[in-house]
Length: 142
Image (tube, rainbow, N blue to C red):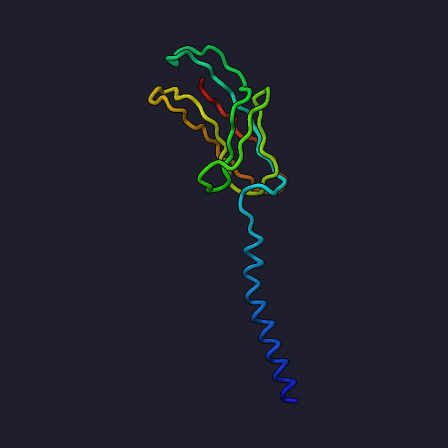
């Protein structure tokens, strides 16, 4: 009888130990980082302002076609996705999870302090599942 009780006690200790090991794993695996795999989307438009070389006269403005738009997931160091705008300047990143994102595209420097292209960045948060978030219009100079 004592042997049977001892085996029961050892089984309970073993089961409890396993449970304590797997509970943290279960909770950490449920935490999802920003990125693909969800059912939300980020969308918007890119407006191009075409100036003369001295940026003193606006020649025209229009919604940019085939403009590169980039998306960074959370705190990633480089872009995670890339799309090109449609004929009407619109873009969309689909199938995203909740979290913080950075949407950007490149523009000429209207202050003429550099010849390099500069990023125009919009920060976006998806706060719930199945949410479509519109980005404030991104204005780039050409």
